[in-house]
Length: 115
Image 1 (cartoon, one colour):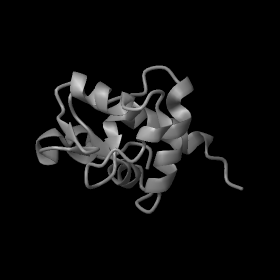
Image 2 (cartoon, helix red, strand yellow; image 1 turned 90 degrees about the horizontal axis):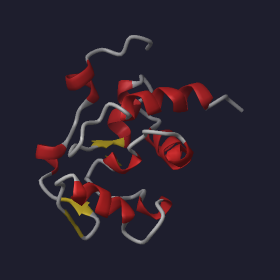
Image 3 (cartoon, one colour; image 1 turned 60 degrees about the horizontal axis):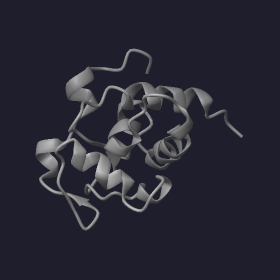
Image 4 (cartoon, one colour; image 1 turned 45 degrees about the vertical axis):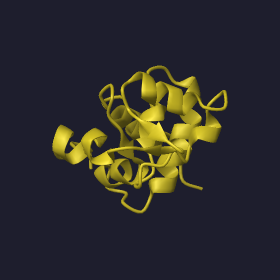
């Protein structure tokens, strides 16, 4: 089995850079890290991130803007509450006006240095 520690660490470094009030997708992070088919692994990293300081996992959603990871947060609606506290509107577990809130790692960070 491959060691996921390095990949997870790289995921966390990208996710830590998502600004307040913005979101990205599992696939966008995976693609940025040169692992376009590893969106699910990004999800696993987000699930494991709750013990890591300053990883805003609530800002990572699926490509349609659905809060697919919400069941990994304490409380029934914590993920939604965190996003709404940042000015992101969520209705029926879906981010509204996703294009306005979407943060693209390629546009914001440029080409990854270690890929």
